[in-house]
Image (cartoon, rainbow, N blue to C red):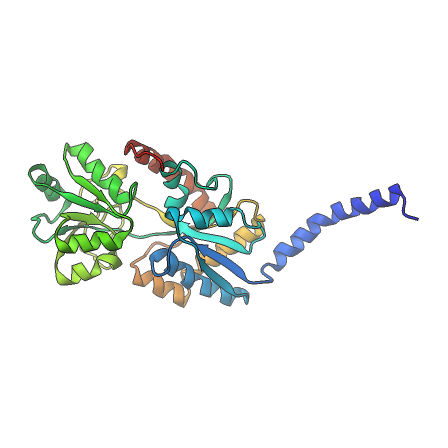
Length: 326
């Protein structure tokens, strides 16, 4: 006959066994397919790196890795989906750092808390986004561009409100008393179309997206924002080399691989090691070369520390733009 004492002993046994069960699950991980949600459409850098690195994870673990694109609301839709997913190591988010940093200022509600709902597994530096000018603008560096903007009308293209391009152009206005008009788009494609049509005098963005204009000679690169040169334009000097050392002129960010916050730490560490190692795999190396990325991914500990530094730097810059949250 089952007694209360028997039930209590059994319950106590289950409690004692639970940690062992969890340890076994994390040690054996993964035992089924892994899903990586990319919160932007296919074809861009965020998607490309996720797919290339996922090949390495799949090969190393023997488990299928599925890429699931869930774009919308500047990345909030896909991020909220992962925030609500089981924290069992089988659902991850691959996004830009802006989803976790910038969006908190841009939106009244994101559907998730970037600090409480996620642990960042790894961060892949997203590379250099050069600033180019229309071929009719007689500037070959940032100092010459500032002088040109003092006496000429300048429309400066930004791929989104609150983007690094928006911050950079506004910083030029504030530091040098300029009246550059920042034109914010929803993505790079329409921005570069307008640049090609001559309605923008300058813009900042990814080398891949502007490549057609570079090849045709319609635009001229004048600076590589940040401290690192772009590998495919090795003669293009950085903002730091040109003497522009304010934080707004040295933008940085990474592609963040994140997991639900309660994901077991051993799984987070394993996935971090796999993701960092993916940069040295053949598909990972080829993808990074195609986008001109030279900096290796940060591991879990490194990216967690850098996340705090990024928030401390970028959030005040976004707030200073005076944007009304949507």
